Image (cartoon, rainbow, N blue to C red):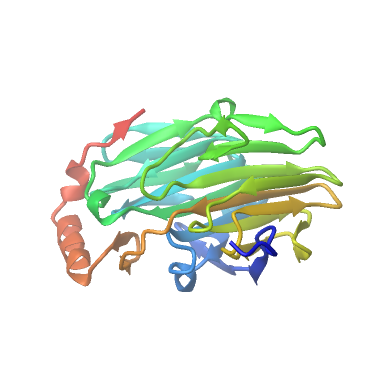
Length: 288
């Protein structure tokens, strides 16, 4: 590492694009298809913050997935998960759900509220080629099961995946080694996190404004972090909240067709045949 580089800098700011998904849920797609190779192993990040029930009540009815993992993290609101194996789980404020689609499943995510704020994120994390046809699995992580710590300056960090300052997160995954932190900075707060230079990383600010090596990342904006240093330092002059996400790139081909992510077009075509033939409904989903 260049001794003159002390911390990662912001390489690019991304505002994302407004869109809708599922049955008309309004959201911002922050990590889009054109960023998949730069932010490998991450495939997509959606941010949603809706107070109007018309913008979220349709939810995400039954839909299939294969070949990757979904990580849903709720800040406010309640969503009910159902899947093709008959499992159900309730995702509430501050909770997360880590679902491995693997060889394929059909699931739904539907609001369990009729008014109030619905806010959170869904992140798609790629699976390595040798895991794409693994058995589907999902884990509900209630808010009180997510480890957290508070620094002397009042900065609070929730460790959803990976580890930070000796605190092991709720989830640990091989191959991609994801880090997923929810960082709450008070005015004047400062947070530093070590990151292997090989790992791609970004922050997404959902409240306030964050400063990374002199670059301001404003609210509702992603800051893609450079890879030239093994740490990142984030500070704030006002109360600020953000997620910090990092992972080890797979460096494998990506073939995607909507909710299916494989390595080759032939695998995508086989996936479409399997879905058409009803094989996804037959998959058992293991639940922790």
